[in-house]
Image 1 (cartoon, rainbow, N blue to C red):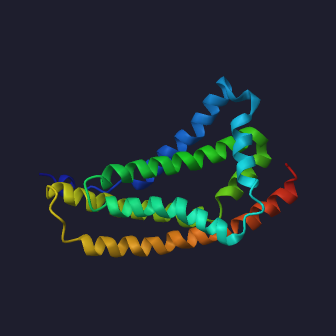
Image 2: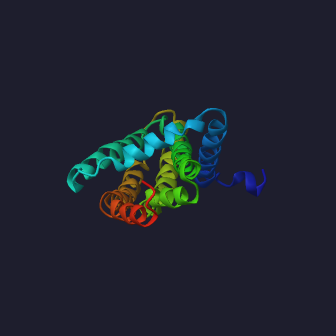
Length: 197
């Protein structure tokens, strides 16, 4: 066997995320040409995003924790089973798809100004989310594949996996806090400057 074949294959986390992001950019463009000329989907998205002005920081934080936290917890738990590997792939593809669709739909709806709004919707919290997704989904993949190879026998690496996922969860929580408390301020400044709504 060659030396390359003996090396452990690395989980292609970034490639999966970028494939999802590319699909997320292409799908709205294709559908826009066929069907969305009346601009309903993107309008509904932006209205739903900016409609909740009366939501307090605590209620918004609980909503984000429920939405994002439950999915992260599901990934962490599934890492202890054979379901973790396919879920890690699916999570990265869907995360990239969602990110790409936000950018593409905002640009299609509002042009250059929409691109600025799309960036405002994603930043700065995605500076935390994307590295955490890439790292934690790689950990989930490796743990799940280890269990798969052992035919369901609980791996000895379970403790270190749980520790690494908990450390990644701290970065994820920082992203949630930024999304809850800093991102709305950034979006309001962008909207006041651009005056698109």
